Each structure stands twice: as C-alpha cells, then as structure tokens.
Length: 265
Image 1 (tube, rainbow, N blue to C red):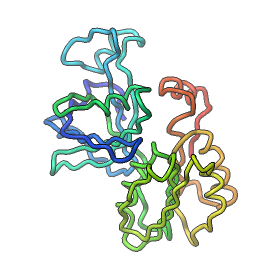
Image 2 (cartoon, rainbow, N blue to C red; image 1 turned 60 degrees about the vertical axis):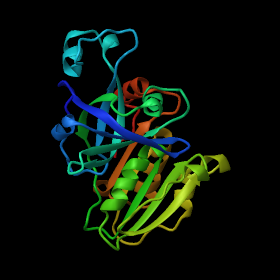
Image 3 (cartoon, one colour; image 1 turned 90 degrees about the vertical axis):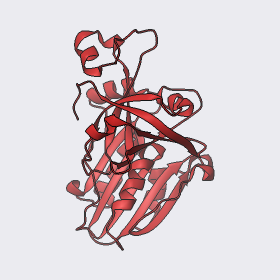
C-alpha cells in the first residue's frame, strides 16, 4: 500500500452501534472513486487523524506533511479493515472496535456525524478465500471480525467454513452471513475461554484447509505453532498475522514489529 500521497478524502454518511464494542461508520463522497477494489477480503486502509496541537495547511495532504515535517507532527495513523466497498452504491463501510473514550479512532467513530471528514490511504491486503480447497477456517478477535465477515461472504457456495471469534461476551456476537456451510464458535473472554484452547479442542475439517488467523499477537504466536505443527496447514494456505499487541498503541506495535517481534505466516 502506498505510504505517500495526499490521501483519499471521504465523508461520513451514517453510523450505527452494532454491538456494545463495535461501531459501524459508512463513508462516501467523491473521494471514494479513487479507492481501488483490490479483491482481498482482508483489505485495509490507513486512517489519518489530525494530531492535537499541530496546525496543518488545508486541505490536509498526508504525503506532503510526511515529506516536509518532523515525525512528531505527522497525522496519527490507525489501520482498519474495510468491511465493505460498494462503488455502485458509493459507500465504504468500516467497523471500529470501541472501548470507551480511550484511543484515537474509537472515540472518533463514536462521535462521527454525517458530513465529518476522514482521510485515508490504501487499500492494502493479501488474503481472499480460495475456491480450490476443501474447507476454510477463520480465526480472530474483534479486530479481525470485519475481515472474517467479508471472507464468509466470499466462500464458494456449500464449502465448509469453521469460524472462531473471540469477544468479551454474548452481547458482542454479530450475525455472520455466509455462502458456504458455516459453523461459528464464539469464544468468550468473560467466561475464561481462549482462542488457542477452543481451536485445539474442536475437530479439524478434513481435506485441504485454508486458514485465516488474525488478532492479538500473543494469541497468534501460539496459534501459528498449533496450525503448522498439529493441524499441518501448509504455509501457502495459512494467512496469520498479529493485528495488535495488548498494552500497546499502534505506534508502539509497529515499532515492535520492526524490531522483529511480530507474527508472520
């Protein structure tokens, strides 16, 4: 995904609360036409938020700021999965995980009103469900739920799909639409459940399995060993990555990844 350029300018069309911790924001406007549909179900964009106390030339050009100003004045960047992109309808949907007034993007999403501006770069992405496998396994937490939901909608009709989604509790469950034969196992933190334990305990699908596994880094490290060693998922059929690390914001997490502590397939 390109790191420079002015960014795509979108505006809020509407928003809604999906669960206690998931806020949906639908974006549109003329800037949507410049956003490519790259075909990936894990496509992601970099959202650019103005840094408090910093005055920017308007309209804000993210690439120019990065080229001309010190890093501490760059807009705050947050990475989010595109839940849906519908050029015919002129809409892009992003689902935000929100935990009160902490963070940057979550509070913005809670307060977003029609007409508010959002600047983003992208999209990137690397995964989409293959048509030539016997089954699909989708594993993640709330951060990965938009990509899991998008993948469910893309699976060929009738193909078995086994999804594991970790959320706080039953109130955070979200209905999933799937063209395949879907079985969902919701993993509840408030009940003491963990993704690793639940995945290990469930019967694995037969045949050639493609797996999408994204979420908190420590869980992903444990799942990588489980899927590669115990479930024998071939490397080319395994998309696994840590989206975030507990106790770190995105800047700290990205620095940690650059130091070699992230998870890759």
